[in-house]
Image (cartoon, rainbow, N blue to C red; front, side, top):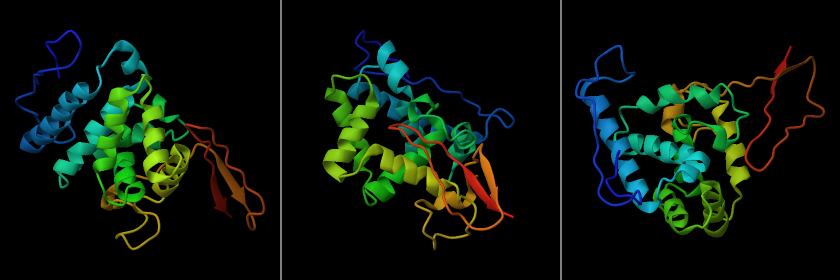
Length: 223
C-alpha cells in the first residue's frame, strides 16, 4: 500500500501480484488474491487512522500486520491462509507482543473479538480510533486503554489467557471445550514452550512469571 500524500494519509493505491503461482505462496490463485486484497485494503484504512511514521512503524508495526491478517479471515473465513503464519510466535511464545511480526498473531484479533468483546468485531475499530488521536506512537497504550475503559480487563490478562488457550490447539475436534475461542484452533498448531519440567507425582508448587507485555512459559509433563 502506498500513499501519495506527504503526511501518510489520504488516497492510496495497491500494487498486487497477478499470478500467485503454486510453490511461491501457501495459498495460490484466486484465493490468494482475495486475502491479499483484504489485507492490503485494511492497510489503506489503517493509515487513514494513523500516519505510519518511522517511530510508529518501529513501535506499532506489529498491530498493523496483526489486524490486517486478522481481517483476511473475517472477510474470507474459509481460506485460512493466516494459520500458516502462526509459528513465528507459537514457536517462541515468550516474545513480548511488540517484538512479534504481527502476522503470527491474527488469532489474538479473534480472541479479542470473541472472548473480550463477546463476539463483537467493533473492538478492533475502537482500538484504531483511540490510536488515531493518541499522543503516543505505541499502540499498546491504546489497546490497554480500550480494554480497561470499555471491557474492564487489563491487557496482560487477555494475553495470558490467549496464550494459555493456544497450548491446546489441535487437541479437540470441535468447539465443545473450555479452551477454544475460534473454530480455526482445531486446525492450528499449538504453542510450544521452550521450558519443560517433568514431574513424577502431582504439582505442588508452580510459578509462571509475567510482566506487562509478555510471559515466561513452562510445560509440565507427568512421568
